[in-house]
Length: 312
Length: 261
Ligand SMILES: Nc1ncnc2c1ncn2[C@@H]1O[C@H](COP(=O)(O)OP(=O)(O)OP(=O)(O)O)[C@@H](O)[C@H]1O
Ligand SMILES: [Mg+2]
Image (cartoon, rainbow over all chains, first blue to last red; front, side, top):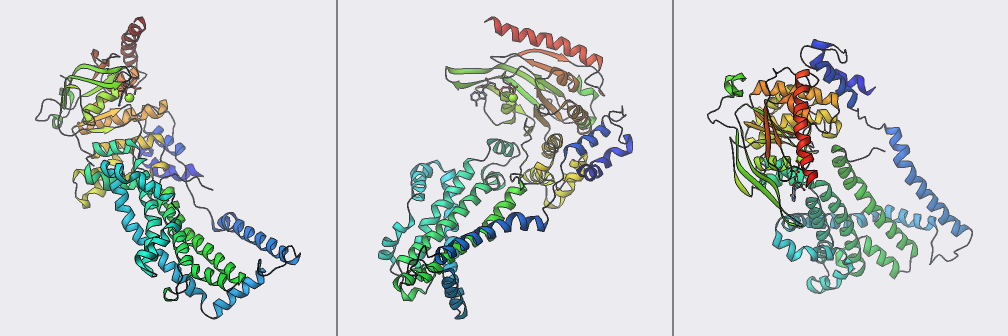
């Protein structure tokens, strides 16, 4: 039980004088009481076992995917949709994956896009973070570009592709430019709202401890704003990935290598619906995988450490 | 004088830990300037334990914030012996740090070298009897334990003056009794001066050498009592109850006075 474990730590100070007799008029104040209170009020937090995680977290999405596949197959088998150029069968799409894998192209597609996306995201991070700090802390900067920054978030990043192509040509820099324009506002805004939501109590506590100016920013404001910042990063990644796909679809060129967006566009040009499906599934898969592997664990770690995550 | 019963090291070179002289504070309200504190003059001697008592909204927190330097008085002056440490009504511990690291941050900001911090934090945790809680996160501690860590963090600042703003108000009676004992013991051990705000009359009498009653709207020093009851006190002791009754009467009179206008 929870109480037995905690008594061990808190009880050591009190046991010598008063034992566990509750309310006993001990000579040295209320020492015994104190240990009892601590033991009563502290809750033990333990981790969920692996089996529970599998059943709670892994099973539901697997079931969902299976249901989608079943419905899809049913549409084909029952001849609801009887036109492979509109809806290919799961097996056709599966073959497309298999061929791409056997010919060694599959990982190439993924890597072309993922490496671009992640590198672009890192650039966006390096620009968005100081920008967010500036907007949050400098009144003039906030008044000047704060509204624009929030406005940019709602501008679909596809809109940036034509000007980027005209300015930079059909090359990788143009892809990075589109990613930056899509992701920097999210990251900066996340940091701004994270900083805005820092409880004033923490700032005041920091000030009485001598954490003002840069020391305050480093020791109090940044860690307190971390959850909002992480949420911004997560959204920033989603925007990076979306922008990149838009750029790859619109601006495909043989020199750029074949990423997932180009694959989709190639499928369309070749009227191969199974290739289009392959590309869509891969785009979705990568977006989810990056979120699941990088951002979600990071966010959960931070929130759990602060007791902000309800277990379940 | 109150200071005579204190340990010798409590006597500092300055003759006060805090000197509040003719301090007024007003806030801009909907109906123009609202005077919250009016001409408060109050000294806290080195090593003295003073409680500030007053009805809710009379300006106790405002005064404490002024002394802590978080805000400026509209008129008058406040001098303190070094930067005071402040313990808030809510624990104000940083949730991204463990209990121990919260204390170490205070040490770090004070300039304690890295290799001494861990040991110092351990000592402070021992002082508030939380030796085993170094690595605990804030949310893993009970309310009473949080306030004890907050007390340890405030002590880590090593100020000559400890300001406390109703630190135990949200705790149940038994936990509060325990913390009263702790605080009295730590105060006697460290020789720190304490300015303790509360609206609980018995708590004020239980802890203080001197009780200062503030009137409301605007806050003025209404009356002062010296508490000569010897220190291992209990909140239920007869002399404590007796003086509390007397103070409560005056406090009620103060509040009643407002009803008449
Ligand atoms: N920043 C502020 N701006 C305007 N009015 C304020 C501000 N801070 C406090 N006040 C007003 O000053 C008065 C005193 O507030 P204060 O918080 O000091 O009361 P208190 O004595 O600490 O009360 P309590 O016991 O409820 O904590 C209140 O009427 C409050 O409305
Ligand atoms: Mg208050």
